[in-house]
Length: 426
Ligand code: LRH
Ligand code: MN
Image (cartoon, rainbow, N blue to C red; front, side, top):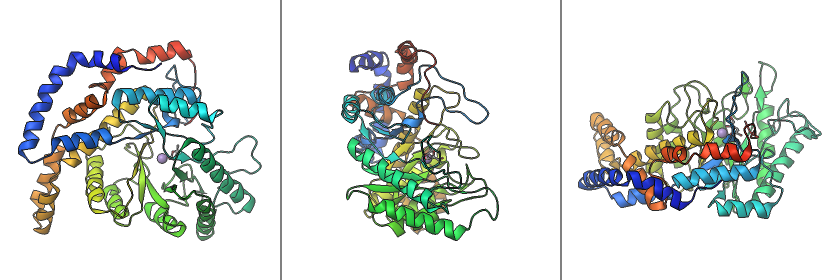
């Protein structure tokens, strides 16, 4: 099932007039404040976020999983679903694969299918947090940090294999997230676990092609509930520095203890040239993997405010990788991902409206009130007409969720795939 440009134009027809007046009104208002509206719209249109291949089916918890019918049951159908999201939003031009959940059988066919859906392959993700049925060694007590060299070697080799798969697809980065850690005090020697992890990452790093990056993702807990080897940004930062220039820290928004100031972490990593990218999601308590911007939209805005500042003032930091990492327990996965993309675009657009020059002046004058006024002036601006204009210019839907429903996409997918197809992944 694909959505044609014509179908989208037809759906847009009904709402175009309304959009035009809203956009023109906002454009006039912003223009009077010296904002280059066309530049903002272009930046939004160019901002592409990778969709995780493991989040196209219904997620679940240990307490249960409620299928969403018509789920993709193979890589081809997953690429097709990302294609549907991209045709409607024009901001999801990439897919991030998880290995071994998504090992291509026919690489050329998969690359052609991705190209036909205007998609590229973003970071490939290794998986040393689950045992594969034919595996020689178990990761029960860790992978790259395991006290058993045979297990570490197996995990290193898996990451090297994942890079080879990525190379065949045109991917340019490897994401390493380790579940490694302990459930009880005394179970692990923290220093030994850290050193084994550093040595193992260095081995993987030496196998990286010249133009590749390695993203080291940190997480404070789960599935281990006493310690995690790569528990926070500082640990990931140290390991990235130990590996070399091609290694960076990856920030998953859900991987922070409550009330952590994530925007400050982002600013520090950019200043040090080690911010590799993001896994966008939202959370109230733990690694909830909820819809982006659904719980803490102001925090997301503050993160993008640091990103906009860093992308202008920190040439030492490469252009970050933008990816979503979410899990859908009760929503249609495609609608959930469309809502996440909207929230990311909205936070970015609001951050682009911050008068950085006036903010700098107010900061130098310690005019705290004006500092907050400047941020909230931008945050309180309804930027949705800018997002719609960017989509319209790129051939997308003005209202993607409305279009998704009026085109009966889920019904067609159920028709095509049958009710009980189940997607691999989390
Ligand atoms: C770990 C994580 C990691 C993925 C997994 C699917 O919580 O965020 O990025 O490998 O989710
Ligand atoms: Mn993640």
